[in-house]
Length: 234
Image 1 (cartoon, rainbow, N blue to C red):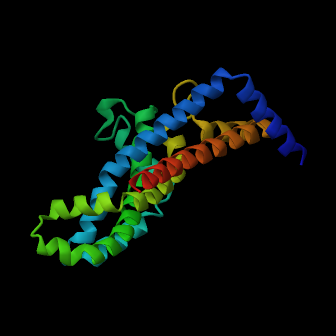
Image 2 (tube, one colour):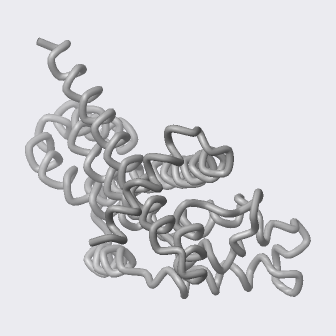
């Protein structure tokens, strides 16, 4: 109980004093997470829509594999990305290992299947309702995908928020490819792990409370914007 109290006090003190390290780490956490979610959305949302409107021979297998990839072990993803980006790997020439870019790449690999699978599940029912209409209008596959993505945009927010929540709490993969380097690749999750290793549990709890607060604030902001758009249509 004392650790929780001290953690709250530590979090309050860090926020009130505008601790420079905290601001740097928090901004880097948001930078890495938001960048990864945006890239994953650009890839995952159209792919989910494409799966919803397309019929092909191994479609069920593709969907099953996509759903299975939602549970990719982060440490395995981190290890694979590490090997690919290491000096002996095929992309070692770019010197991306132990940089925020490497962390973004690892998070994109983890988050993309989540967004794509949830998008497919949400758009599949929408496609069932729109199927006859869009077919009768002689629309192309791309036009059908655009129609589903636009009309289902509010339901897709859940997919994006799920991806965001998964990414901002990630530690295994980004610890491997980022290295938790101070002033370069240290984010909130890796900072928490570091403080726990040092035995500074109040500070670790304080950073944890800040991490949770950031996730809640961003989720609330997106929901408020979504509600505003919905009310504006009326």
